[in-house]
Length: 114
Ligand code: DGP
Image (cartoon, rainbow, N blue to C red; front, side):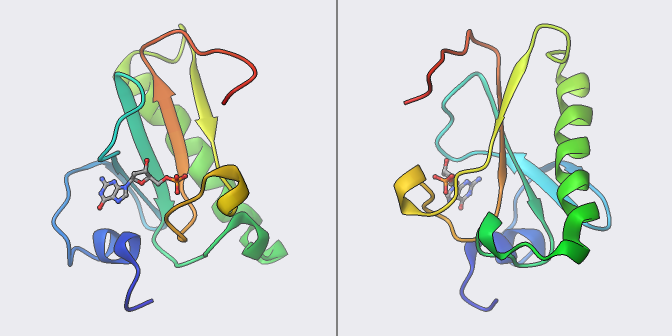
């Protein structure tokens, strides 16, 4: 997608330090962190919302979760705990329409979320 900020981050057009990357996923720090560790894991491929995932992308969804778990280990927060969130559409607070898995850690999480 030409006008997608996360596509531009994933393809290097907007220089961003990656905390993790592989053939399908890149991960970087959120611009507006909501926890001491706040990482966004995104697919390199443009998918607007979780509603748009196709059955053949099941492995890609798994790769996002596996990337988050790996990053949590790297950050040393895997045992203490972390939260992963995918907001879908405006009612859930989605503001960037390229799917992303938030990884939040480093503080006590509360339930229910806001
Ligand atoms: P969401 O509300 O679920 O769509 O989350 C989008 C997140 O993306 C939000 O926490 C802020 C972050 N964000 C938006 N633009 C940029 C950017 O250009 N760089 C980085 N690192 N994060 C961004």
